[in-house]
Length: 306
Image (cartoon, rainbow, N blue to C red; front, side, top):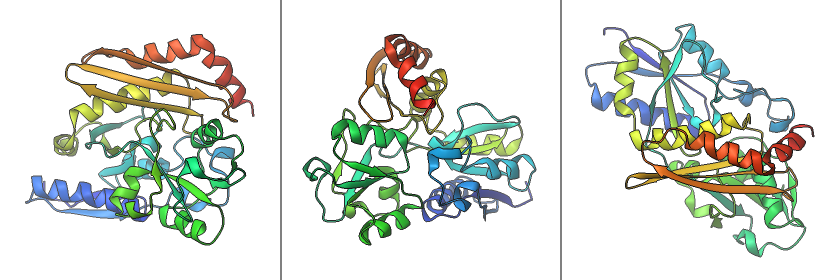
């Protein structure tokens, strides 16, 4: 292969870190090939004043990158997997999923107070309905407001007095080496993560030599776990704005999957967990149906109507 292989990415500090990580791994595996990065602006980068849940279609942070990939302006796309729609995109494939980082959410406060010790009526900012619902479930007297922007922007807003605390993905904080700002990590039974949170996705066109090259980066156990989380989400017919959490992990020859759905105000929630043999491919579907049949359907229907 004589041509330069171009990786497409968003331009945020975290996105550039993740795409550079992929680029360096490919360079190490294929030292004779040439690679470069191309920064692409997405709708998620342009419309920073809109609440994320108000009018954003699925694929808000990835659509333009995928279009560049389909149109052969880039050869590889690097995403945070949780931003990718659960439905397949024509002519594209998920060639590799890197080993997952920390799946948990973190709380950062202006004075380093952990979430559980926040005074009532404190203001916590998040762009996620899932986080909003779980914050209110833990403490209904917290005021939750919207916040947009990349990690640095959100921390700056916190430091400038916009709010008393923010909730961010631990993996992103770890990759940017700012874990020193974390006031506490949420346990899974306090705030269940978004499906595939902490995983980096590497997308290519669905045939050709580049797909085969990228597949060498795939981490099998991570793929199995996040695939079941995304199947759970897809079966619930939920997008990234729905108050849905899921986390799968492998222990020896078994895979366990924990999932939850919540009302927007956090007052109603259903959380269940299943454990199956490692090679069972139906756990995501089965857990979703179990939650739907236990009242999850009405919770999600009500959430979507608001």
